[in-house]
Image (tube, rainbow, N blue to C red; front, top):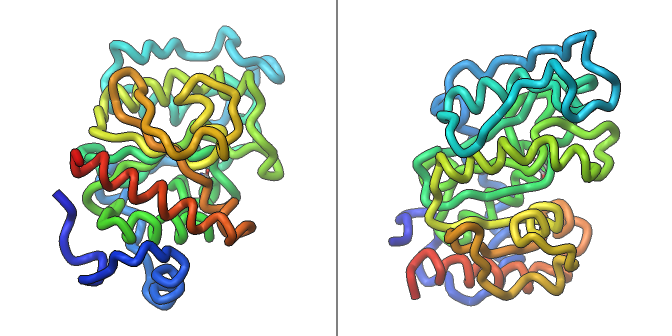
Length: 250
Ligand code: URA
């Protein structure tokens, strides 16, 4: 069932750009993690004994994503020193939105604003993500849970490295198991490739519905990529329509 009151009635033209432009003045929903997950504490600084560049040093806590509960999983992430990214972070960025939401959005990695606030998708790309979700009647305030493949900011916003993705994977696996969303949306190639288990480029992956351990999965462009390549907005709109169809069961 579509959440009411977000998309203007009669909005069905499939023109994401026009809609997004018309909504630019409106401020998107504020991040809700503080309300839903009180105690967004700064990350524990890595132990000095953690070997530089280690992805599984002795100090790293064991995280079994198949059995741990939500709060212990989050606590383990906030204290994580499993990879080198722990050294430069200000916050571990675990999630925002509703852990009981129907949709889980998976992005790539925190940027500077996310690192500063501890919340995913709060910069320009996050504003666009909120508009993309609003365009199909969804919002992080009530129906969407948002997280990333990588929970700590890579320095200079470089791409996550394979060993960093591997070190962080238990957290994402645990989040998917515990939130148990009805549908997954991967934004960007890192999330799309991890969730589909392929190395295909996003342009070749999009347009189909996949399954991640039985959960339907739709993939689309990362909002930061859309900001750089507005020509992809129409394709993104098509992906969002596909997402809506999957959520509506049609
Ligand atoms: N880009 C992402 O992939 N995730 C964020 O949280 C912010 C920007």
